[in-house]
Length: 377
Image 1: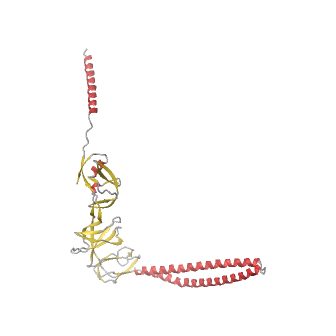
Image 2: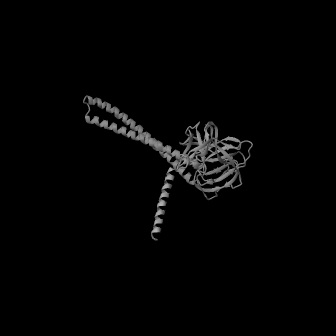
Image 3: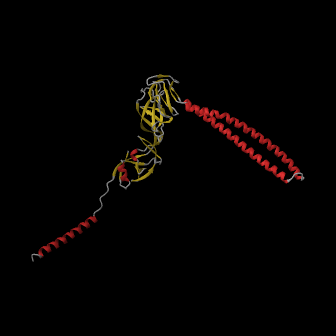
C-alpha cells in the first residue's frame, strides 16, 4: 500500500502538468500579437529653389611668378651656375645638361639630307626618262597597229610592243612610288632634326622669371630626369590660390570667406595625379606664399530641388530615398548628380513629394515595412 501512494501522486502531478500546458497553449493562441509601434521620423517636401552646393577644400597660396624649373631631356648635369638664395633674372642660365649625344645625332641626320636630295634628283630623271620612253613606245605602237590592220606588221611585233608598254608603265609607277618614299624620308629626317633642336633647347636650363632660387634639387654630375624639378624660383609678387582636385569633381567657383571668385584650370596635374586650379585672392584678404587657406568649393549653383543627405540611404553601392504618401513609405532608387555639404541633387524628379529624413539604421528599418509617424519640417 505504501508503494502505491507515491505512484498515484506522480500520476496526478503529470496529469495536472499536461492540463496546465494545454491551458497555457490555448491562452497564447488566443492572445493578439504585440502591436508594432510607429517610428517617429522627420519629413521634407521637396521644392525647387536657388541653391548652392559646396565642398570643403584647402587652397594653397602661391606666387604667380613662382616657377619650378625642370627639363624634358635626360642627361648628365655638366654645370650648375646658381645656388639657393641667389637672385636671378628671366633668361639667366642656371644649369647645363650634357648635349653631346644630341648634337652627334643632329649632325648625322644633317649628313643624310644631301644624299636623299641626290637620290630624289636621280629618281626624277629616271621618271622623266621613263615617261619619254613610254610616250615614244605608245606612238610607235599606234603606227604598228595601223600597219597591222592592213597586214603590214606581224602579230608578234604588235604583241611585243603591247608588252613593252605595260612594262614601261609598271616601271614608271615604281619610280613614282620610289620618289614619294624619298620625299617622305626627307620629311621624316627634317622632323627628327627639328625634334633634336627642340631637345637641345632643354639642355640649357634658364630662369623663366625674375626672383630668388628658393630650392636647388640638383648638383653638378647628377642625372637630370624629365619632369623632375631641378630648381624652384620664387617671387614676392602676384600671389594666388592653388586648389588640387580629383578628376571626378567639376568645380564652378571658389568661396573664400564671404567672397566668391572664379576658378580656372591650369590644364595640368600634380605629382599625385590631382588636377590643378587657380583663383585670384579676393580684395581685402592678405595671405603669404605657402599659406594654407580654408575655402569652399562651389560645385553647383542654380535652381534645383535640394535633397538632405540624411534622406539618402546608400546600400550595396546603390542609393535610394523613401517617399511618404498616403500614410505609407516606398523606396525609390536614385542616382546622385551633384552633392555637397548642403545636400544633393538627384536624377529623379521628386518635387512636391515628401521624403523621409532619418539616420541610416532607421531608413533600413523602413525597408521592412515598419509604420512611421512623419513630422514634416
